[in-house]
Image 1 (cartoon, rainbow, N blue to C red):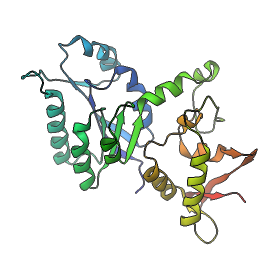
Image 2 (cartoon, rainbow, N blue to C red; image 1 turned 90 degrees about the vertical axis):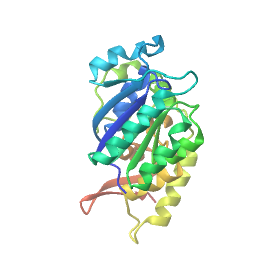
Image 3 (cartoon, one colour; image 1 turned 45 degrees about the vertical axis):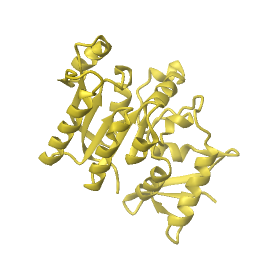
Length: 254
């Protein structure tokens, strides 16, 4: 299943996600499709939610107020889940992004996947493994915020484009295990000529590591094609990626 050109509903749990992460989430979602729903849930009478006010105006986010009727009960989660199901039955999206670090949304993610919808999670390091694994893709917002902070200042001011040379910064993850896994995927899935469809390749990468993101490996450009074209080992490029029979394909450079 190729995850692009999707119609995305972005639902944000303000109790568990800070406004500091919103631009990261929106930037990551831009490579998968168009975000049609932008909803933020929480009790905005609580001072903890005040940090979201500038983002609400700048990015046209719909604010969904939910007051906790009973002490100790998370009314925000309940409202967010009810709204998510309403959107599902309207049948106007084919992808949900649940921005939360709360395991309470695990069953909701599984429900969406049972209906063959793409589920993208976005959360901090504390996000339970159960929720991470219930998602097709997981956006590690805390790690990406750190990765962005490590980008050279001169490059941060430049507009990123697909053709711009990828710039390295301090990596959060080691790249060697990824290279090994990528080679094995191509060995197992390539045609007789050594080429593998890039979309199928990425599906396998995300099955093994659904929080995959080039920025975690020290690359500024988060687009996978540019990333895998740029990987070097012992001073030599490892993979070749190009248009082949009108689709992107990847092979190991001998």
